[in-house]
Length: 109
Length: 114
Image 1 (cartoon, chains in turn brown, orange):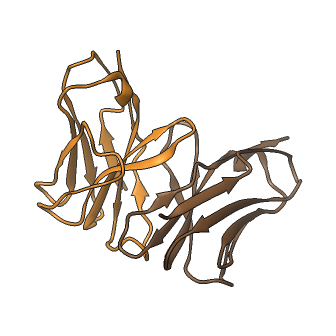
Image 2: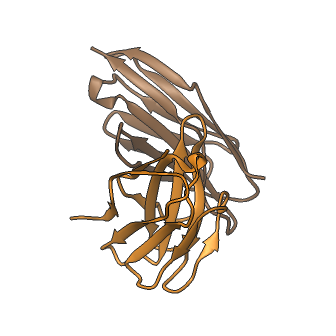
């Protein structure tokens, strides 16, 4: 059974304090790993897709990386507007996406 | 640039009542999905559709029915609402195939069952 575990559950950072969020996964045959951002009262917003170990994607202050067992979402010099819940999801075979429970990030000015 | 639109945005029901949640997408996507999101549980797939006229069960299908009569619409029905169905419901759509393309989400329907 595919499993996705995100850590930490919650993270509080000072503005400018860089950190990383973790997504560990157990799947048989990864087809894609997805990162989403979710703001309160909104639906998840797509950020990145990673397909193979070693792949990296960047967008503004965010950088996603992928290994064979986990993915990291690195946040460099975060700003208060980066505060949100970040969701990780994996796809394998023909089964539907499996989502992690998310990391709730708060960036304090 | 509507994307995925869900109606209604909020609803309160009494136990035993029925209702239908509507999802509409204007991106010509083949795949559509219904999820529920509960505190501490993450997003869980209820039902999904891989094309017009098709539906399939997800992780938590009991108590729900769906229909996909038109490509752009995906309806989620609760025949006899129960308090355990209090949740935030999200609809999503995708180009096709689970592994290669991202899903795009609506902003949710907040449903309370009293």
